[in-house]
Image 1 (cartoon, rainbow, N blue to C red):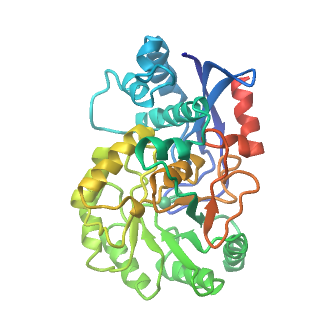
Image 2: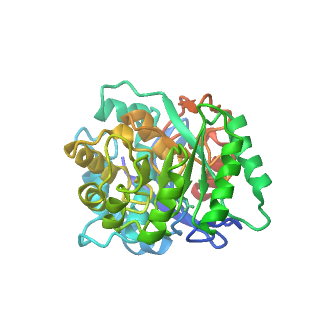
Length: 388
Ligand SMILES: O=C([O-])CC(=O)C(=O)O
Ligand SMILES: [Mg+2]
């Protein structure tokens, strides 16, 4: 059993939307196919992966370093002890050969994307949904099939007035979500408060709004927003300041006693650990959003979950960024608190398998092989073009 080829294609996911920090007019991602010599139903098993929105495609790093390291390794050294499947941990070690620690810039995205495709292949070779494989290997064998999901959107874009924002939020609620998220920090505070009031006006009892500043604020602005947001009962106040400014985050808790969230731009277990050590995050109410697709993959995310446990954090406080099915499987298999969802954005990569309904804010995991990309017709079409 061996990996015979790994292919990458950089694809556009551009749109006119913007958050407080970037616009998505030139946004791309890497799609990866890991092609094996294992044959199922007359066809080779192929694992697929892609990186989440917000970081660009990483084909160059993959082609120069990470793909050759896997393909040049002794194939037997990449298998598990029984020799009957690929071992994601050993493949990860091969990718990380001759890489120094620290500075987890773009390579964590490159490795995380290949890692996603490897896990998809591993679960397909084991003939299981990935969430079941994870529950079997790392848990008690019983996945949490019902996963909390929230709808992310509420971006700034040209011509978007308050009515359009309300329509967007209402459409998520009508599709079964009970938590919706919108952007803040890309307009003056008073304008944002009007936008928040508009979004809240379409919510009913038990439905909540989260807001996301995308790391835009310095301490003074972060505090001004904290004071203004305190009057609401928000699901969370996300990424107020620079993702690496742990002191800002720690100070902010003195001005905001309701839930906060951050972590989507921390790309390693060590960075996540620094947030937990120095960021003043509160295990009883705050949320951690590390996204495996951007941060060295599930092999690293398993280390992050171990680290969290050692620091007194429950994994139910993790709701990953990215809205991809990989984190959906991790949430179901390992018992996270839920997952982000982009019902309309970043298509065909955003969203979940066709026909999956959101009910009262939860989805029920379908029985699909691997990560489940085969259940989303527009996505698997693009993926199969890469592996054909
Ligand atoms: O706008 C983005 O970069 C995405 C984001 O922060 C999120 O989904 O939380
Ligand atoms: Mg965010």
